[in-house]
Image 1 (cartoon, rainbow, N blue to C red):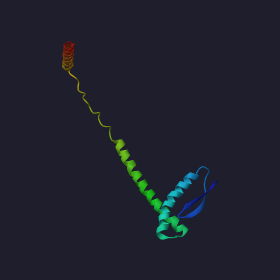
Image 2: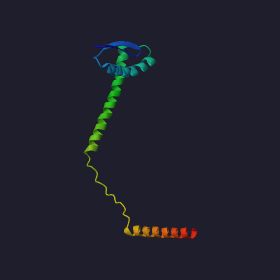
Image 3: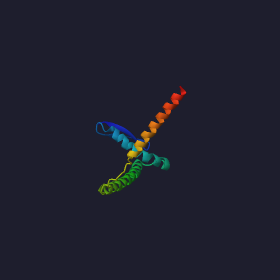
Image 4: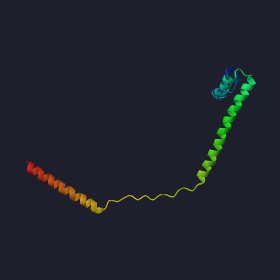
Length: 123
């Protein structure tokens, strides 16, 4: 079991952990240190047990708030999943009337005939 040195509230602690778990221990210590540092800055040097207790309580309070929010979100998700699926919406796509195609073809033919006449006169 490796020993890891962690720093909380400006104090170093030697902690043993399972091999491969060092990064989890350091992450957890970082969270605890983030709560302990402001305490030490505000109150000065505190007894080790009091600093750890207060930092742990602050971290537990944040964890409880996150767990409460998670419970609410899970309840909301369950509610949304229980709703029936919405009905498919009918979408109508406009169709080009056949007369329009014929008219456009006639206009194109006239335009080509006019272009041919202009070319003939230009020569």
